[in-house]
Image (tube, rainbow, N blue to C red):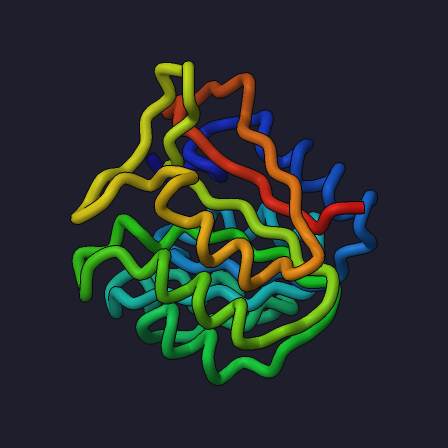
Length: 183
């Protein structure tokens, strides 16, 4: 599907609410693919780094971002994340797990984010298992579920965190989790 957030119109409003609540100014996206979500994130943040491991997608979308404040990187998300300087007030939109190159990098991405130790970080993970809902989610050598990421969240948020899932979904009807510092 070549629509922002796989056609889910509810996700953008959730991201805007987090941006406003936490004063987020910067966005890092993993899994650029066609760049449609990237452009929506740019509409919200105006400062976006996007990471794509697949050369075909990268070069197809790179031209779309040329005159915008979007900085595309080619490579494995966990490697690129390690080389990006930490910036406080960052929103991470993690969606690289569909990549056929190198498997699902989600746990490695979360580990790198925890190492960065920057302040006021919010995270959204797309294609995530939402308990009690029939939304789609990804499974690789593990399910994209809370139980799988909880240890990493404790490292990222040593002072505590909160999270919520999407209650509504349209478009491809995929699950998503939003994670943020405890206030």
